[in-house]
Length: 125
Image (cartoon, rainbow, N blue to C red; front, side):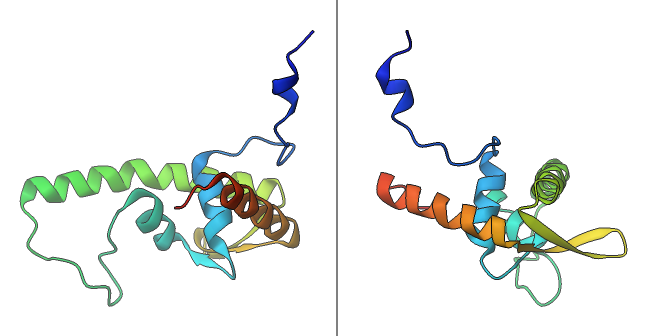
């Protein structure tokens, strides 16, 4: 017989969500750009379109940033496609590239539930 404590936690969704997918759901709100996901979750500064960055990177710092970017982008793409497949997000593309994420009504309700659970547990991002 399983322990009673095992059944005390409330089930959030019928699917498992990665920490990245949870972060996207919590922060998407009215919409979030893909570059904001890379900056917010992975800490990769944006280098384009009017965003200020320090242009004085050493060659080693530049390589490290590029490597982090190369590792982060496939993870972001996989998480976004899975959220779209589950019906939690609508992806806005330009040609074939995902540029913006908007939550569906199902995604908004799940995001609200995740935020409530974090608020009760005392986790702050």
